[in-house]
Length: 268
Image (tube, rainbow, N blue to C red; front, top):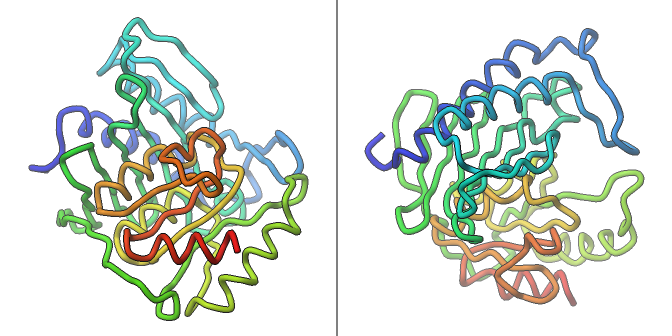
């Protein structure tokens, strides 16, 4: 892995350890231990066990770092300049129903700025990774590593756009339907696959041309933001246009040439 730094290698190793738990439990729908955090917001024992494996692996390799984890919350570290941001299972609802579209997402902040990201597609055995200033890459199931670059697009008419929609208990259904209607009228296609982390990784890989969603959490998108940016994509807060979508969880991203048109259509 010539393009992976020691830090990224540590993150990838942790993701693979968490993935062993998910691989073991995937498909055992009737035997999953599930609890509800809120309306249509579930957590499985696999989420927690995956996070525990990831945390233990990272803590051993980088003992001073802090953590922000979906299930475990905030863990302060002695090294105040570094923080891991972890989603041990992005796409829990897919996982619960035997849908093989879910991932592990690990980002890291350095001095308050997103610095590196790893997204591991467990079932497809695809490892996406990036680090600021070093580019964005994919290691496929054969172990072949390739650099990712988002193709420039200008016309929504030829584009495939990914999105996430609010579920029961989340606000913004009417607003989202208006946004979706605008994009449906212009884009070649719209997809909702149920994992924001993979939506961002697939955007970096050119499988999607744009992505937007509201109300996401930092662990959903931290790693993906780095991967998209290092693949040449632009990532913005959806309403303000700032470079900090983590502040609100409202995100839009695409190539530099397509982002203005995509944003204009969503906001218009």
